[in-house]
Image 1 (cartoon, rainbow over the protein chains, first blue to last red):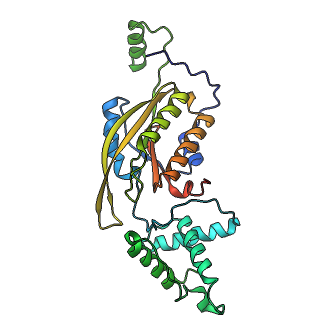
Image 2 (image 1 turned 60 degrees about the vertical axis):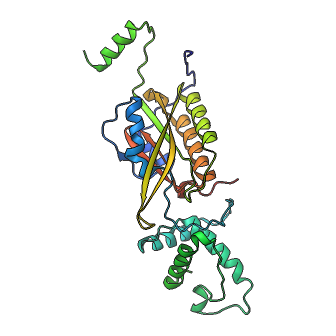
Image 3 (image 1 turned 30 degrees about the vertical axis):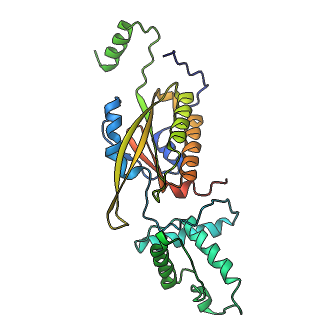
Length: 154
Length: 140
């Protein structure tokens, strides 16, 4: 093993709070005293494993196989977040990006509807929309669609 | 003599001349599956994590682990997967904005490209979870 030398010029150290803000992370969870030895680090997997990587449970459509940066007004993104939070209060864990993706897909399909709907009904999910998620996530996606429709979130 | 004195003395006994105690450690959890259960190129992400942390802190170690988590939103189903924990010791002053930004950018990329619901790391004695809302707008 060769001697390691880290010659990077360093700035002022970041605090935990500054790090959390930089990372956009949730509130940090104190783990108590952690002995920095290999065995303890290994045990960390059990201690926090259930929270660490694959936080599933969101009604994710497997057909969403690409991620793209879509420019939008900050107000639009705020609205996606607001609607996601509204669904979250109903017990459905939905990310703002998922709301945006569904809104985009539904919006595109609405372009095919003739004539344009007017009034309050236009804010609900049109009955002519045939949303076709992958079979594995179909039930959850339909549940989300039903929630969206019931809540009139768009 | 305190722990620090003991450590310095022990290091001197081992022949270490320039003793720099690395009291802190960073651990990054590297997944092996997407949140939908599909396999990912785990080895690639583990190796990238090791390389990043080695460059920042002078070294990194990977440990294979196996864990499970309770999916309360899917009928309390227990989901299991192999993970790697990549960890590095560092001196307090090594965790500056540049290092933190490099780690952040990496875990954002890992979380986005491997379709994670969240990514996690341990830092300063705390578990820090970064939700996908933080990195879901990654451009390919």
